[in-house]
Amino acid sequence: MVKTPLPIAILISGSGSNLQALIDAERSGELGCDIAVVISDRSGVQGLDRAADAGLGVEVVDWSAFDSREAFSEAVCDAAQRYGARALVLAGFMRILTPNAITRFPNAIINVHPALLPSFPGARAVEGTLAYGVKLTGVTVHFVDEQVDHGPIISQEAIEVLPDDDADALHARIQEVEHRLLPEAVAAFARGNLVVDGRHVRLRHAQTEAKTG
Ligand code: GAR
Image (tube, rainbow, N blue to C red; front, side, top):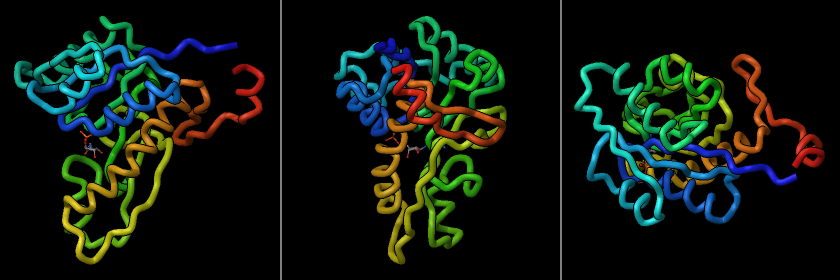
């Protein structure tokens, strides 16, 4: 049985290199998703050009036009649902979604973070990593819950911090890993292969996929 691709909204704030990785995975049939819309919290970012180049639906929900985080978060969810999205993928989205979004997309919001959570949550994680002097950092892909950078972890990969790294050099190596880990996690989610049990996420047994897929 062939499964219908899962309609998703991808949320961005910037250059959209993770968005591009998701578009490429969708185009090659690996994502198991249909990118219903790309939503940006601001206009004029490169990610919007990437979305337009790929012929995707695009919405700008300008965060600065809202007087509360809740109202902004509702507007983002409204936009996603207008396009029929059933899950949200935060690909370099630098705004915090409030609990209303988790209620509207329960266990269906995935985020990529440029550090090994629970270390260095929040914005400027790469700079924080370098300032602290850790020798290992990495990438975390996780479900979003009510707390910032906190939900159940889907996947992580460690990356060595080199002695003469600056933020740009380290972030470039982190992004290489993000571009692989995020599409893999989204594909596993779309195929129903992620089982969430409290804080723990495990891959459903491959045999289940063979029976149903
Ligand atoms: C990515 O490295 C992502 O991990 C990070 O923003 C970058 C966006 O790059 N996200 C966060 O820091 C979220 N706390 P991109 O726009 O090229 O995908």
